[in-house]
Image 1 (cartoon, rainbow, N blue to C red):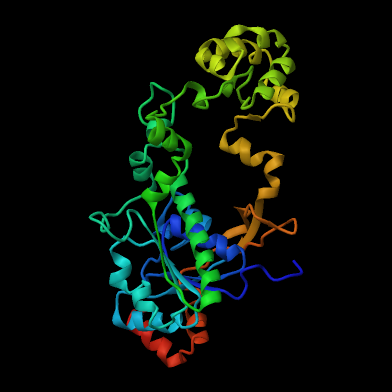
Image 2 (image 1 turned 90 degrees about the vertical axis):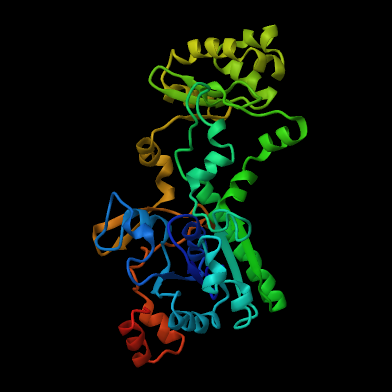
Amino acid sequence: MNRPLPLSGYRILSAEQYGAGPYGTMFLAQLGAEVIKIEPPKGGDSARQSGPYYLGPDDSLFYQTFNLNKRSLTLDTRTEAGRAVLHRLVKTADAITNNARGDLPAKLGLDYATLGAINPAIVCVHASAYGRSGKRASWPGYDYLMQAEAGFMAMTGAPDDPPTRFGLSMVDFITGTMLATATLAGLIEARATGRGRDFDLALLDAALHQTSYPAFWYLNEGYETGRAPRSAHPSVTPSQAFRTADGWVFVMAQLPKFWALLADAIGAAHLKDDPRFATVPDRLKHRDDLTTILDGIFLQQPTDYWVAKLGGVVPVAPIHGLAQALDNPRAADMLDTVEHPNKPGSMRVLANPIKLDGARLPNRAAPKLGADTDAVLAEAGFAPEEIAELRADGVI
């Protein structure tokens, strides 16, 4: 790239671990921010120990997933000496993020009440399970619990299945994205006003926000969205999975025009004149009948045939397994490789979905535990003997 990355020059400290927080700050790091990952000296981020695929001591593919492009500083912020080090670093930082349990930021001095006295422009972003106030502030919590409590599991899967979670930790990912958004908002405000503030996010709040239009339907009309067969849209049909000769295809005739185009494309123009399927409400009322008819048509050809037939005409996609999704040539632009000392050759990673001037953002492997401790402290003005003393005392 001929120009610096958009966040070049910003320094962000992050007392983070596992998923939500690291996912959000990785976006900031990939966009050019200097993200200094603050980790406990013994073991570091718990994601380093998360299997089943390890890359030597204190490293794993799981950890690499969320920590590309960052620097690693080991620091025990629970000690007085560790907090003193943190305060010196805060003087040179633009923001500090954490995804600690809700009652911990104030205890650890990671909030604006503490750090604003050291650097009035510091932006403090907190992402916890249940927020920093209320009776559940001290509760630990994870993505799957939020999917359970916010109603996701009750809306996912087939009607007769037990409550079902998403296949991925989507609450972590959306909370991390919101953390990145909040951090950017804080940086813009602090640059304009010279003052930072606290920004708060909770996994449960993020999950509830993602209930989206089903929430509006319930809150205003008392309608509770349940599960539909074939992962179907709750109010539009045909918008669901259909069996093919060799697998499954997902078709979304979300608009009346797509229903007409679909009927013509699959050689079933007569269905447009069937009174059972004349309008959106009619098709929803007779969804089972329509599914049976369309299954009979889609089963006559393989998935690739239908994707080629309908692609660009009606919204359609093959239903892939993970291997099919990632090995597909269409996914090639979303894959990247980085060098890793414990991975012979190179490590394959996902590219950031954001493009700058048509190009993918650069990546480098996540850091070894404490790889940048000495450098970060030296940059902050610590003398070699100070660094040696901190290490001897177990602070770093």
